[in-house]
Length: 215
Image (cartoon, rainbow, N blue to C red):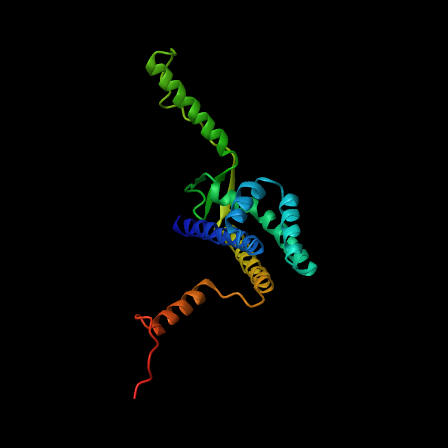
């Protein structure tokens, strides 16, 4: 199912942009303390609930003078990101299967944890039996069956991808707004900054001496 696989990969990639930009926005507020911001975001804030994350973000943002209107809009956006997280997690972490009867769809196990648990039980039993710690038949042909699936068609994946891409665009806009306020000038995209650096390097004299105009 190559088209389905491609969509699953795109959903994962776009979500990574949402997460990274959210972190980058937080790091802007703690400019000069980026390492602390990274640890706080991933090790503390992401383990808390949404209200805790918003409270920490708002406290720091208010200290930096970010207007209430921007904070309110960003809080609303963050709630939408949290709502989309469940869809993303289902897609990215799903245990997938395909069947001939549904050539246009993939099946996502509703309880993959039980399948993994059952398999581990069988493996442990067989290992114990081979070691002589347990007596009984080797369960080589007794495999747990997954009977409950979600049916996910290509159109379903496209809806989720479009939703996450829209979140990417919106969180990027807020990142630029906050960057402009934090640094009192528009934020350049990373590739623009790289081009500026390359341009300066080309113009620089390798000897460190100023160039004399040609006669």
